[in-house]
Length: 337
Image (cartoon, rainbow, N blue to C red; front, side):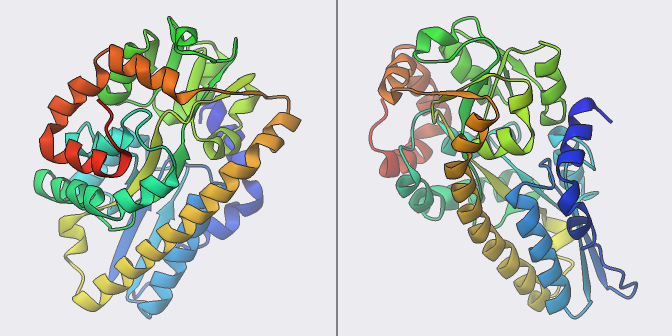
């Protein structure tokens, strides 16, 4: 177990038993499902997943045994994506940007500095843009996505050496990013030195200076205790990020329609509750992290947006996504190029 995982499990000890205890003891279940994610037990995703699993098991009257495996217990993002594709894992929550390594269209919701606020995000993701992405996921893989994407939040940049106030501060910065070509492209447009590292290794990578910076929503920065290895947090809101709740098609299709309806209804309901949880948590965390010694600064989004325009980032990805997907994005964000 890596250093960061020890920290995460220790920090979440108070809720470890309730989350893990959702594994059903009913040996007579007709259908057993495994759901994995990469987040600490203390993150709202796992609180709502525990409730969701308990509701599915109860409403199915013991016919379903829905098990939750948080905190990279089944492997990192790359491992679990491979498992859910093969059917070894039934369900998995994953950022659209990492899913983009398999389904390129999924990345469109993460275009840098595109969504200005949640007033644009949810209409897009619950509307035509989200429907387009789900269609592409189903058409190009062994997976499908439930209708209500879960929230991760707007991503912020933390560093151990200096605050990020302007695009020039990103030049040459060794910043950890998830394993996604889209993230690489954006930070190279800012002339950074991006390092692709799976989340399970982020704490130790920052601690040992493999990377000097990282970017994540405040909820993850706090629950993963990244403030212990990072001094500065710059409120860039550079990308909105979520989690598609993915399922293996063949595995899910084993269920009769009444049980499919129970699972679908509870997954989507939990996603809506988790959105509220994450928004409230992210809104409250600056004060908590400041009290623990983290130094915050605000930034001007248009400076960064202009840098991406001049670097050709928007033009490049407009071509890669195509007119349909880009048009659906700009339907909600307004013109980006």
